[in-house]
View: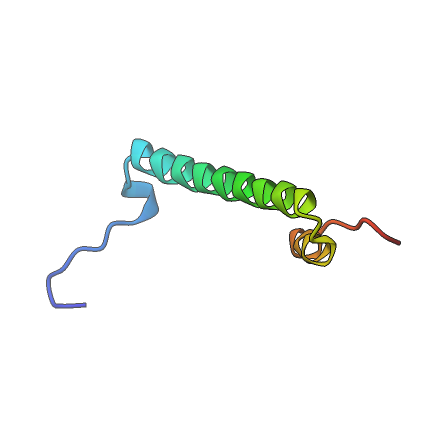
Length: 65
């Protein structure tokens, strides 16, 4: 950091800016989850069982004991 530069802390950051960043992160998360769901439906319809099971393992779901 250069001499004389000022670093803003989280306490000094406006609440609206923190809220916007959190909102964007939630939106991106929901979007990615929706895309993964669509890919899973497509794999099921195309009878790609192995790829579908791999996708389920990536998601963390367990369909077999």
